[in-house]
Amino acid sequence: MNNDRKKNISGECIAAGRKKSKLTQAELADRLRKAGLRIDRAGIAKIENGLRSVYDYELQAFARALNVPVGEMLGVKKQRI
Image (cartoon, rainbow, N blue to C red; front, side):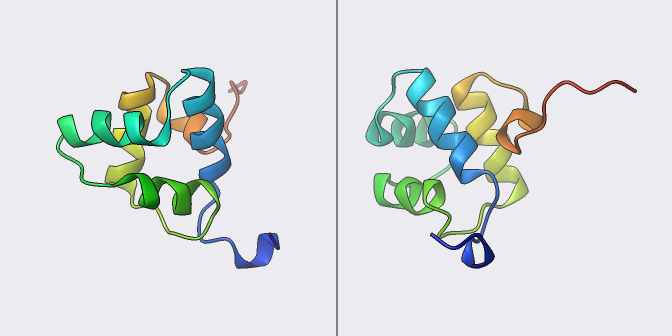
């Protein structure tokens, strides 16, 4: 997909985190639902493919569900300050 048309920069990181956690999209959707966020498997697929925007509160929920820092969902590596 053309990067100019992507609606988020976190989708690829969410997909990588999900795969690293060995979760299916449906399993991740279930974790999000249990946390109070309703995004179905199709919604997760759209996010991972950059076709759907991600709100900040959703990004926090993804990070919690995948047990990673929020910054990792944005592709941020540890940085020196």
